Length: 211
Image 1 (cartoon, helix red, strand yellow):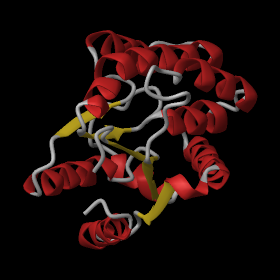
Image 2 (cartoon, helix red, strand yellow):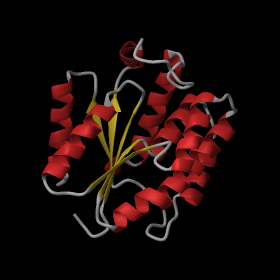
Image 3 (cartoon, rainbow, N blue to C red):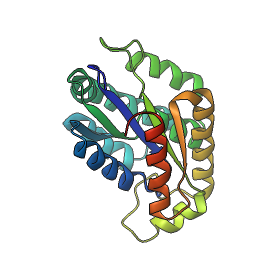
Image 4 (cartoon, rainbow, N blue to C red):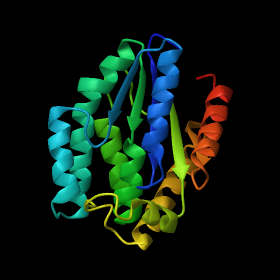
């Protein structure tokens, strides 16, 4: 671990089970003595949580949706992520920018180049010219399986209520993003029992020197 901390994001379509394994990883790291900041996107700050509520519930066009996501991300970076990294902590984030490319770029079909420009503007900070996670764990799951897992669990938001075809496009967006920055990504087969998924994650993190 360096003085600049370690930034790990968890990504995947709704229902992939990433939040469960993020909790498990946080516990494993804390048991090893690391200070861990757990957070999420959109959200993580008072302002970003308000923007999350709007983005997940109010109808809007894809550009407005993307702008809200990046506005929330900017506040989150400045108020939570960068300070935690400066303290040398491990930041575990449930979604980051890859989700915007997957959901707004893939799912909504929004212009990839515009998202890349927003990414460059928003993620430049005093600590990094373009802040990205050091490692992104991508939980891959067929859209139909995800839909079955989500069925009846709670009242779905604007994204969770989309048809399976939407989530197939989201998965394709994640795949494109992972291929564009393959060294940053670890792909996990999430269509397995929980213990098997954790074993994959643990093995990957040991190989990377995180555990």
